[in-house]
Image 1 (cartoon, one colour):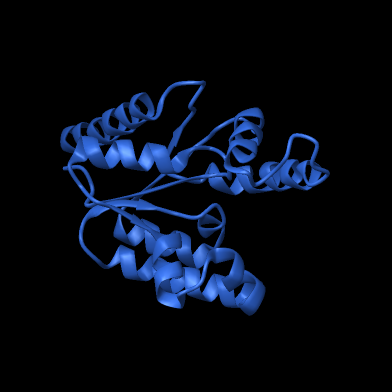
Image 2 (cartoon, rainbow, N blue to C red):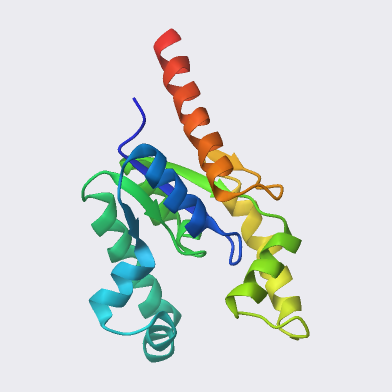
Length: 175
């Protein structure tokens, strides 16, 4: 059986949110977002929350939001780009379901970040963005499912995740 909770994430600009939406549609499940839970719980935007509480406060709220969705109803859980980096969060995810990483290339993430308005094409922050992408990607590759977008649309990527989940079910039954 496909796990009750599939935790989808990727680096900024990877379009993991679109993949999560498409996956939820295919599985006929709701999407729960760690970041939306954080915003509604704090009544602040993520940017305001980060400015007001700093990294430690932000990450504490992120952990609580993750536990909230991990212990709630079945669904597709959308993680923030930093959520999977915390070892405690990884244990929570492993206990509650399965992690699926959208392994977009640096170029795809840069393009997506520019599209989102997080970066400008001439932004000096792109060097920091690139360094952080490379550092985080090593940790992200620890997810149980890793899918490469390769220019495909979110629906095709969601289909691959469903297929990989179904393959896991059959492998477990045949073992």
